[in-house]
Length: 125
Image 1 (cartoon, rainbow, N blue to C red):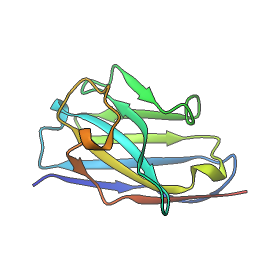
Image 2 (image 1 turned 180 degrees about the vertical axis):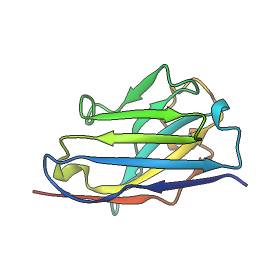
Image 3 (image 1 turned 90 degrees about the horizontal axis):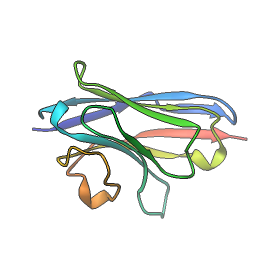
Image 4 (image 1 turned 30 degrees about the vertical axis):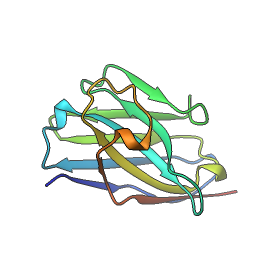
């Protein structure tokens, strides 16, 4: 059974930083692309960042480019999201997801077959 468990969320002031982690089990982690999505109440879950199986290629939503960095450690079966210069608009529940397509180029929620339960990030002005 695939399990993705996010951690690292919390409350910060604008301009601050957080590092999210997602620990994976029950899947051959190094053969999956991984992604981070976020969702606020009443809105669709939206793509934030993706990383291919090897970590060599990454993609980002325009709204987070230059501020967020996705990375992975296949030996530790963990994917990370370093979030810097946080803004109130970054407030959301952040979800980790796994995609069987290894190249990391996909960004639709329907492309990702496994999901974590999410971690809350709150940024105050």
